[in-house]
Length: 160
Image (cartoon, rainbow, N blue to C red):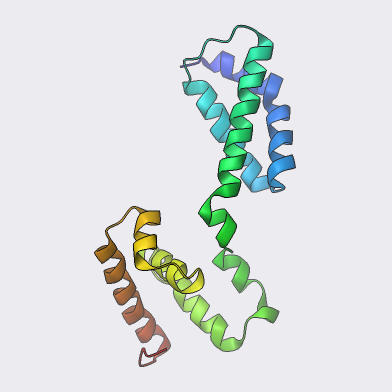
């Protein structure tokens, strides 16, 4: 594990390079900051002994590029739109859709996640179980309970 001084020096020397690489690949400030932290956390925890400053810089660049690629190919990044973004786009949602979306957003996270993945992203229960690392029956149970909560919130009979 690296010392605080080593970390500060590395961030000072290579921080701008890491951020620029991230921005070029991700085109998103929030994701850039996430990857920046991930890269320097890996740097702090690695036991690799670098032969030179160039070796250290090359290692950081490789880790940055790999982290960016992993984020870009992640299933969540490629197939999702945040629920908050949908709520902020009133022209694209009818009043009924907005009401349903707000009801989904008000669910506890464990139910909200499975509802979103199933109904908005069209994943099957086994796929959701794999994504969330849960048992398939747990996913089915959460979907059933979420439907019940939504039925109460929206006052429907649950057939839709």
